[in-house]
Amino acid sequence: MSDILHINNLSHNYGEGLVFKDVSLHLQPQQLLTILGESGCGKTTLLRDIAGLQTPTTGEIQIHNKCVFSDTKSIDISPAKRGVGLVFQEYALFPALTVSQNIVFGLHNVDNNEKKKRLEELLEGMGIVDIRHRFPHEISGGQQQRVALARSMAPRPKLILLDEPFANLDQPRTQQLFLDIKNMLQEINAAAILITHDHQDALTFSDKIAVFEKKQNGPAYFAQIDSPPNIYHQPLTGNIAKMFGPCNLLEGEYKDGIFQTKLGDFTTSRSHKNTRILIREADVEVEEVERDSNFQCIHSFFLGENYRVICRHISGQKIIGISKTPIKSTYVNVKFRNTDDVWSV
Image 1 (cartoon, rainbow, N blue to C red):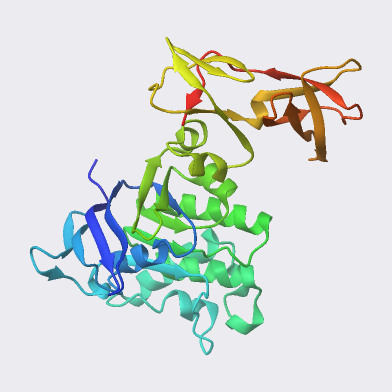
Image 2: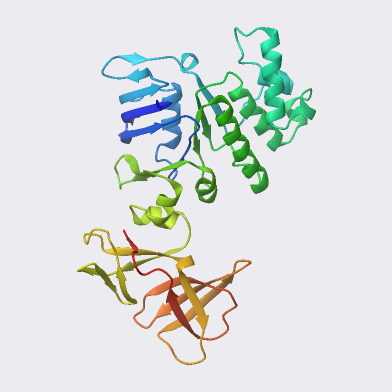
């Protein structure tokens, strides 16, 4: 299967130093890639480079097997000829045009019958048939977002770029739009890149996740590009591990397949060069005990179905775990669910 997008060693310099350096990735049809990273690391810059709205410093970009940028080949194809759909946080709908007129605005060189057919498909697919004759100021933010998505998909682009499009929407609307996007990608056999700050949504809906990290006073880079399960369970850095919820990074020493920590021994198949192991809070069970133990409860937080408990070991090491019941005693017992092959970071 040929890639929709292929980026090779892309770098961008605004004149004050590199924003990111040697960024490479590929994306296949029907895949949704989410890019995560701290503010200022170059997420939006990368999307604008792909769209052709600005020019990278070095590297190469191919979209649907066509080179659209290469510094060595002196290629820089205009945005209109790249076949890319764009959706930004501001939506950028035309205020004087109706919903229907906004959606078909970019359908050039298409006869009226085909234009009407495509409009009906998008109105139905996005669930906005009943607002087709309204103007942008007459519809809600969630509806405006659906219109913006429909407009970006109208020309059947092979690549859709979404820059924090859900920032102003509530969780139910966001999740429904994710499902709408996934369905549309299958329909037109396209791929999409999404920038978001919602890490849980990234885990839930992405096919791949790319995480930008930035060294102090240096350019950003992709620290890991992987599937959501691998990003969550097998992060390559401590920052990525912490990005997806409370976790425990236990210091220790590796010897003969055993990682020795103050809280006990764990087996790991990873390199002994790593000095910490990752234990997710869901893999730590906390129970009340009436007698003295090696663990004390510091804080307990109600999460709904469970309680998050912060404990302290007699060594001073803190650990976060889950309890099914409220913790009322000072002392607790801590059990680790998976100790056979923990992930070292």
